[in-house]
View 1 (cartoon, rainbow, N blue to C red):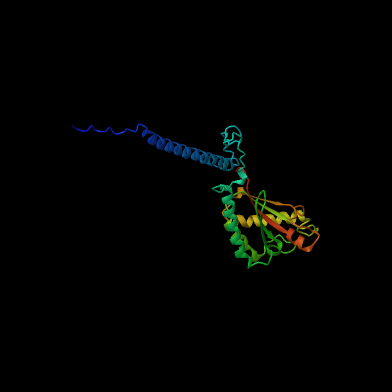
View 2: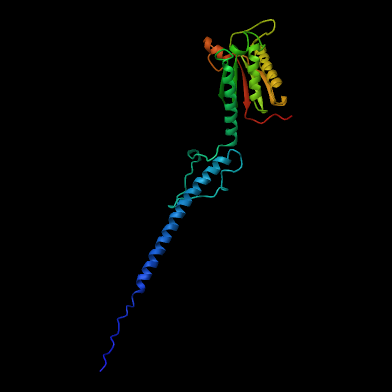
Length: 249
């Protein structure tokens, strides 16, 4: 008599294992998507801030509703502070000014050994880069004639200056002057400014329409006239590389 075959027990719940694996993978996939979306949102906020900072001074973008609103995950408006972010690239004007300042600084350092101490000074102002040619190195007292030994320094400065808007200003201290040539500090300061401007044009490559000269006498001091040291600093000719546009020709 033949034995009856035993029927194997069929497990109908094995599909749960595959289903659980699928759900786990799906959960991990959505976690990755969520994390990526949060990272991209932060990058968008940073990029928007950088672009706004870079182009607003140039007048390319206006700071109103044209810029899309970016919000945090909580729904509150994101506070973007462009000034706190480091720009990935410097602005063109800053690059130009830094390059010119470095070039002029090298020229001045090369000429300092040939002239008395304190002959040069350089500073940045809202108007632009200012190179001061102090009287001690460039003029005799009460004279508007450039010292012979200083002509080479002015020529070197002229060669380093770009063809850009330039103003040459003459300044004096507050001690009055009255000579056969100059009736007041106004005439002296204007004559010194004109002498430097003429040399810059003769030795440089600037277009004359880009250059102007003016005398301010003692009324624009950079130091106190109460001391000899201050008066010495005030007796100067300022060469100002202007940030503004060139005058129309």
